[in-house]
Length: 573
Image (cartoon, rainbow, N blue to C red; front, side, top):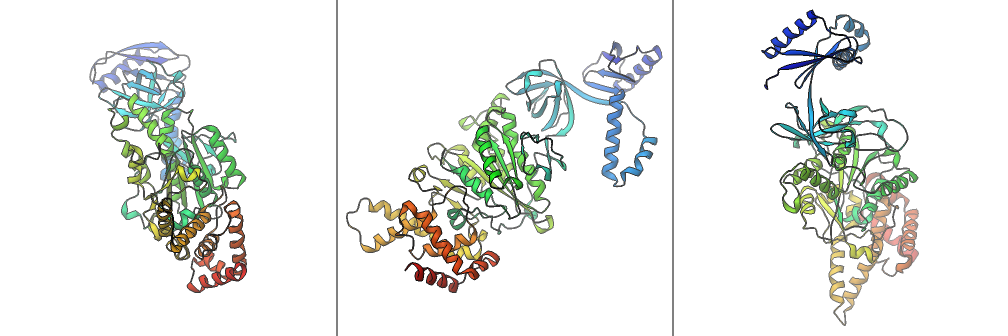
């Protein structure tokens, strides 16, 4: 321990010689060396004193004793449920003690990073309290100092100002009351609708569920988007990456998926990282108009927010989702987007003077996302059977999926849906590239009806793409090739889907069954969506018993397919 020569006593009344003798003996017993005591008049300290010795604070005033009483009652509340009858007994036998706090001093501050000396016992991820109530989180533990990120404005933090430990790791309030609200990464509401009463407080960093605590991903989470549910199904507990260039429809897929969870007992969490505030406002407006905000939480760290808040945002959203998952509920969480999250972490790491690696990202950037996405799981029945499904979003540059961050996240997730700018510009929306997209869960996350209806859809589209490429160079084509191309064009018409119009499972199955009859190949592309919807609605109304089996049992027999075929043939020839 460094040599301590003096201590400072703060009190409203000047201490007597007897008081100084007692304090001197206390310091001698504690520090094993004589320490002189200096006194400073502090009128704001009533009913006691505060003694500061180096980095230690001994608090014996009204506020300090009140904190001890609160801690004692909180400890008792956790141990006993019949708390009220015991409060009187607790107050009777409770004796306050001198409190000791560890404090430090700011040595430098700038760009949202503060360096602190004197907090030798600080733990990684611990929340520190600066002057003016500014909060920070310890992110870099060095030999003689601690570097931390600031969650609030750094204007009130200056060199030489005092920093106190809280003993708590970074956390976020959680609870049912957050549904329908827009909050920042610290759980503070930013929608102007008043405070939120939380049910609990969870750390933002949690260990992922162990293998023994999980069960296979085999329950579908339907997006309502025909191209995804038929070829790249998503299961509850899966991690499916949405990847593509800017302005290719990534957010549209996310919005439609959230809208499709209405009435399906799935809680949705949308985490906006580095997005414009106007973009988030439009999303919230869309969800509100469609009645989806009732089961949705929006966590927003906009582009105007500091990098530390953008860094902590996905972990905060994940903790909110884990609260519901551990109660046995199904949760869908969207991280939009992790490429901006990685950029924010890179900024923080460079300011912390960590060694840069590829593309100036720090060496632990892979762990940055793996420890986040591994928290998504389908819990075992012993753990309640809840699930947390993650849809991370990555923005590419010129469709380069081999860049550093895209390859990292692709290797972590259970598949990816790749959106191509060329298809988007041609009007094929959603612009899903069938060749580069994949779901590693596959048919395990599909109902029997969907699996039977989809059949060889993906293979048929791949063959169409290949023939379409070669047909551009061929002068004459045989009839079989022409028919295959017409069939593929009909399938592409079917897979077009308007924004904010998710399809039910029954509509998807009927659409796919009719599409395999070549009934959509002659439809004019200009009114394809209207004609397809008309044919499908007519078939469903005439085969309501089949529609009920698909909806309730998720099954489709060969006889059902044949009957749908005959119904459509009799009506449309």
